[in-house]
Image (cartoon, rainbow, N blue to C red):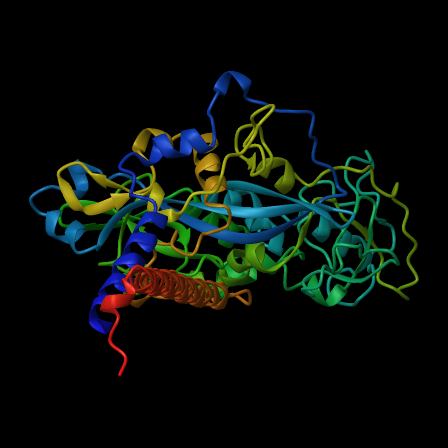
Length: 493
């Protein structure tokens, strides 16, 4: 009897659990469209305009698998590598927050667009305005203006000054690169010191030479075999645009590009088999190729420009450079003109970004979140390869935005970079490994208690059924006894 009851309980458990689990869907894009209706006729640009009051704060990086490129990945020479997971077609996306006065909104952009726009933010690249202020206020190396006849207003025509009207990418924004002390109120409610329009940045003359601001600095760097800041930025930007490595593998040209790292906390430089940097291979690592070609030194020089957009809050304001505190020089500029830094303008070009709440669609209503597994579909005829995006959908960032939005923050499985084989060069302070592990543990615990709850419910149902059956049998017995005639109930002695 006990064995029979156990079998019944187990059967009930499977019925309940099996009934609660949604069946796998074969057409993930249909699922997305049901959850997030697409109507490109309602594409909504809105009236949003970036200003110097905003700051950009990275959130996470998502790598989504795309259906396999059959010509490259499923040919006679590459089929086995794809089957073993050593060739994956993917595209990486940066999810970031745009904040103002403590209020933030989430956006997404392709990782290449994100890096192209924000690489200059770390102090690499075009720092003409900062350097002009250095020459005006600090001179060559004396800490003061040697000529004494120039000020921060620029040349006689007044077409240059130390206001930072270019890209606003050098300041004292917590990294100690260029600026010194900032004026009161430089910080804001959304945390940290962040530039705002017309914000004063006091120069630190000790940083001028480091950033190649004196006339003979670039020449000296070239003589020493070192890289200039312009060269470092150009190189990193070339990586963001998919750089040809000058080598081949199995007849395919090799390219280097940025890709979300293994936990989505930043980017690594990966190797690809196509000039769009989408067919990723972990059979080659960028560092090993760079060492073979003798170009590995520049990656060390470019470390901070690459890490910076993921680590620091980036202001969209153009800095206004003031003389070093106590230098005796007076600022004679116009105090700035509320310009937006070109890096923010570049990132927020029309069509290169989408807000995650609406994905650029007017009167948008998001559907219920879906799981990563529900979005997956299998390559036709190749059961070993599953993906999230069709090639067609991967070419439309608005469609990608809706796919990311449908995941509702469940990005832990949306990573394809293999650090064991491709290497891990960059170290990011914000690690997503812990959060993903916590989420996995939490999900496992939740599933465990769900099963326990189902078992208890099944046991309760079974126990209740047994009580009902026992009560019925007892009532039946009493009823049958009540119907027995007195003569047959027994004799009295």
